[in-house]
Length: 289
Image (cartoon, rainbow, N blue to C red):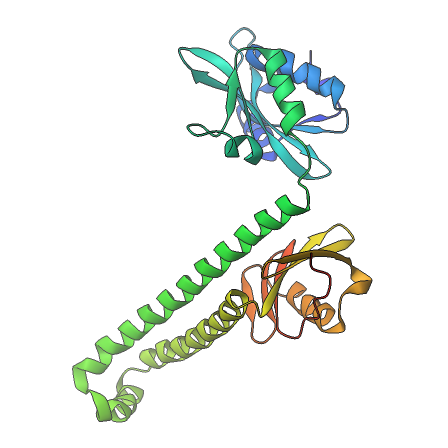
């Protein structure tokens, strides 16, 4: 089957760029995967199969064959199907977060039987439910807060260290004000470092404020779910429409939409991504389960 004629099979941008640069075309699916992909393409016409890796076909010049796929439905990645080497032979690997949670050694299910692979895909590949979306976005938000908090603290420490090197050369303790006068006259560059340190310290306090609110159940994780919002506050999880959001929450989400990912705003919250936000105090939360 020539995959160039199949509407729901596309090349990932990086694969297309690499193919164009090296003058080859991706026309077929690797024989290890071909029966699986052909059956799924017919059975799931609304799924999109994105080719993420290829290999030289070997038989025809300038031809590559697809060896790795990511499967999508309505923009959500359902999982991966790819060629793998295991137990002395090439096999079909099927992988997503659900499969990984059922396995102890490898994240993927692998088999040499195309029918078993198709069965596993049909069983395990489906859009995330509310619980799964909430779990994923909660983990993403908490990881983002930890990473940004550590980055800001490290930035403050580094800048304070640079200031300390200069300060210790001349004075300690009460002499610090005289030291500032000294460098104002002789080395104005360190004044820029001090300004950066003050800005970094302010950012660190804002991150700490939001982090403390989130960890003490004084902030909500708000997840965009189509036209609705999933709201997680402490152990409570609920889904509401945009009309049911409080004015305070609407206002704060609106403010967070204007900033970049991983940006924190004092007394407002943080933007994790386009899909989720941490919103601090003032939230009316009455829809939890």
